[in-house]
Length: 611
Image (cartoon, rainbow, N blue to C red; front, side, top):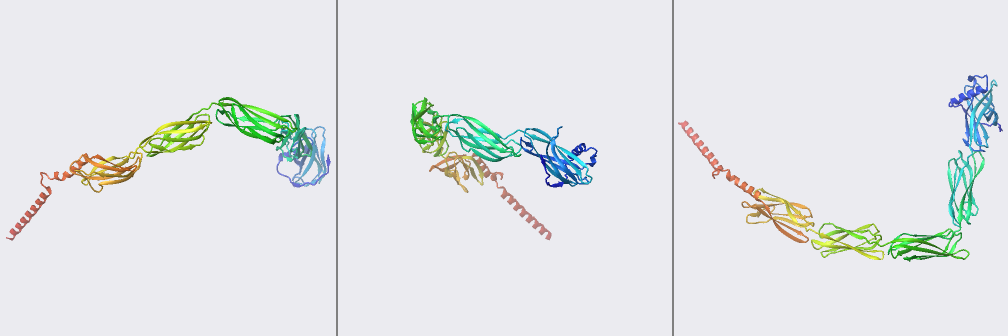
């Protein structure tokens, strides 16, 4: 291949790849005898190969960078640039002649090309023949080149399964470009003998290197037997070569009647269950006057007949039915399809399945708990279904001679599950025996379960706790807490001292209004009493209202120690006088006598001095 020189861009010689310059210098010395290394000023700096991984028939471009070094004193006239084999028998593949002059310190890009029909590794070289523009001294430099040619093609994979005549199926073709460069003008066609195919042609344009593209299609065999589906991929490589790849897959098809699929789960005797029948028309043509019936042995079937005017070729329909086994054990369900073909032939197809029915197991139970409180309490009822059939139409109620209980309706409870309901119970006495009952349906059977529990209430009861009696200001102070020991509130609680022959209520608190005391709570109080002499107890009255009724009771509070302490305080002034005579008047009298005597003595002395 011979080509005339072309005008190429110029650039300064880069400072990198010094090892390449040294290699070029050595090569130049090898082909130009008698020239010292210091005189060399021309080299091939770099060579690029495109595509890096070529395929047979690709045009491979080898682009050489020829540099006239800055150390050169003149321009370099390029006579020829040759791409040749590097073996003993040199074969030239391409050349550029009369390329022109490269000024000192500049480079030129020289494009060369080559194409190989066979795969392999090709070791080539670029040779540059030229001379100095000053002294016409000739110089030859060379650079090694390796071209890899691999026999590869884009991969084509068809996915299509066996099917029935006239049944439309989905298929796909996957294209994988495993080449090192993109492929262009990609055209995919799909065909098959006696197979109807949609989307027969797809233009993919460009498929990049390493890219995967998938094309979906539908196919439908027209006849029974073995068929081949072909996928043909036409593409153009980066080197401009047009190639074709063909892949095929074999599918089997058979002529079939409409398919029946009967689905029915195992059931329980006397409990209604549901099933489905799916009809798939794969006979290759539409069927008409379609009638589907379902019947069973030892099984009652409801919604047992369905009619369809037409089922198109490749279409399917689904219908549901209900069935109820009459007893436990194995039973059969039979679905029969009657239809008319395109030639007006009436045909039938049947499908039979077996179902296992368990004997009905009734294991519904109640678990009851109550919240402690007053006249209105909450009864918590857990309904547990441990049987093998759903419990429906559930009613939970309660009865008692001393209470009324709320009634509730529950949603269905599946086997192995439970539901909780809270019912209000109102007591008319302190205790009530409740009979809790749940009624329900299991299939066609009515069931009932019950449990008994007792509900009690403790009315509010006020007791005095933490009582202390201490003397204070010549009286006794009684303090403590009015504690509600019941489960209901106490209202209008009043604590007061009860007067007697030796005990008198006194201020500031002859009585103390506590007010309401909630259930299991308390409130503090202080009351005062005056006593005559020693007393052992102080009567304290507690009055309060519970459930609309006022209750009153009296508690004798121990006051022995406090009363004795109060008496001791009262006796203390008398005991401090000695013999019963008041000490203070005696002392005052003595002081007065002494003062009078002192006045008399002073007067006498004064009178004597006057004499």
